Image (cartoon, rainbow, N blue to C red; front, side):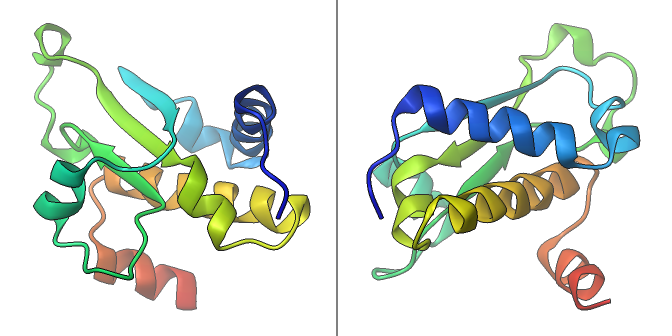
Length: 125
């Protein structure tokens, strides 16, 4: 796949946000959504990402279900989408957009407190 500029990648993230269920998007508080070329060595190590595996996105922060109302003093939570790995697993712009949207939705689910097994079960229907 041809390399996508940061500006275009950001537009794809914005479009994905617009297409996701707005009742969940509008209730996200104090969450920054950012892009980064790829995860740091520390992030991969912390999450136990094995050699040959790719991390597409990451939620860092306090899940909403664990918030008590005093979070204004905390740094914002953050969802990071990793541009290079996302481009590595897609073949064209359409599949890149769909993978961005899927990864963003997955990380938003973590914000709402869902773990991987719960997310996987929901995705299977």
